[in-house]
Length: 222
Image (cartoon, rainbow, N blue to C red):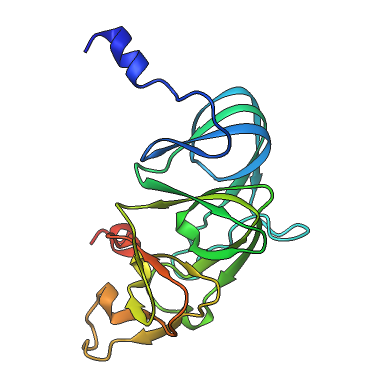
C-alpha cells in the first residue's frame, strides 16, 4: 500500500455525534464540554483539552476506590474542552452502550473506559469478596442518561441468570442482580485457581457479561 493510501484508509471517520468507535479497539469522543475517562487511556487528541485527575471522594464519588486485595486502583480523570479525544486500553475491544434516564448497569471497575458527564456513578465493593485472593472486587454502578464505554478482552458473552461466573472474567451485570460469592469446595487446601471462587447470580431477570479472559490470572502471571 502506498503511503497516501495508508494515511487515507486509517484516517479518523468524520461526522457523527457521541462516542464513536474508530475500530474495535479505539474510541473517538467528539468533545464539547466534559467527559470522564479511565486514567492513562488517552492516546491522542485534537483541539483544546485539559485533564484533571480524580482519585478520591469530593462531593460524591470522583474516583475509583482501591481494590482491597490487589491494592491496584482504577482512577478516572476528567477531560474538558473541545476537539476530538482518542482513547484505548491495552488493545482491549471497546463496547459502547447508551443508557436511558434511570437505566443502570454495574461494571467491573477494571473495565470502565469512559462515560459522559450526564452519567451518575457510584463505587461499590462486594463485601463478601473482601479478603479473597480474586480479582473483580470493585464494581461501578452507572446510571443514565448518557453513553458509556467498557472494554473487554475479546468478544463478550451475555448470559441470563441463574449462572456462576469467574470473578476475573466477569465484566458487567444488571443492577437488579446482587451477586453472591461461593467457594468451590472440591478444591483441596493449597490449590490455587480462579475456579475456586465463583460469583453466583440468581433469578431469571437481567443479564451478566463475561469475557474470554481472566484479569486476575494475567496479573498474577498465570
